[in-house]
Length: 401
Image (cartoon, rainbow, N blue to C red; front, top):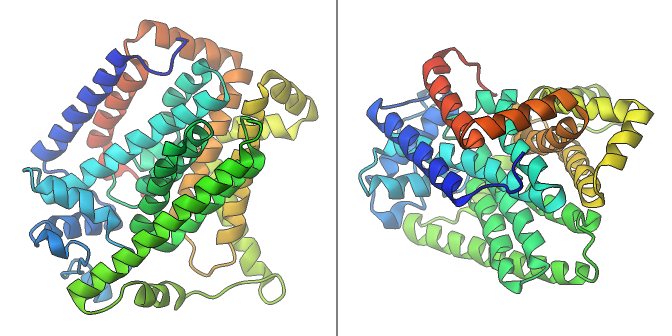
């Protein structure tokens, strides 16, 4: 395995692969059979025809007739539509622009996970994660979508990478603010998961940098204040365009149909939701989740795996497990539950499991190292091959709910 995450030449290869697949999406007029993706792509395409001053206030425009949804789109803020609408202004068809942005977010997420793993483990393990994460079931099911999940994962990873960099430079406060702002503008209330991840990162402190906890708390306070300012600006801009505020009706829309199951009044519902999310955290990142389970199931395996990992990697593993557990505990009591809510947690488990598998499965280690030595730009080459396969098999792939 090579001693660095990416070379400049590989960066060029990644960019070339992305441009090639983007061109194929446009040339084939790609659309998804996933209803949510189709909806968001259609809204993005229609929004691009509006003046830019109105992009903050998308409407349903009749794209969800099954539910008879009309008027302003208040399910989430407009963040997921803005970049596709902007790309359409430079000649990319609006609907395909949404899929290109979703694909780009997925690629960015894999690369950012590699950067984060490189901070905590070895460059070889980080590079292996670029390969192994592409082979998870959730990656196959979500290869080209226009949904919120990959942008939210990017928001989470930008926040964590920026927090790590902020240990050495205050300028990375802007990166933390960018991550929180992306989460807020893409999926509103779900930015709380990004905030919780930032808190866990500081509490577990994977790199154990001395004397930085107070600094990171200050960074988060400043970044949080910037994000609150963006939320205030968003509401004011929405009011100017529509004559209505956004956040009040949005909160009522999100919380109106929600009931909370507690152990006292509906233990079976709570247990069912917990089992639902745990099963997804095992299936979506398989087989790397199984490597994690195998290491944790047998005490000798636990001792061997943890002894083999450097201390930052060990703490990174603890962070991934803690974040997944906290996400499940936060999501399970709500009556609104879906597979996609566990998306970011599944990738955290997948990243941790991929590192454990690479370190504890010798045959896998030899296979990945051998392929990386023989195949030019292996991670990018694999990404291109899997994208082409997705274009062929797309109609037969199941979808996340």
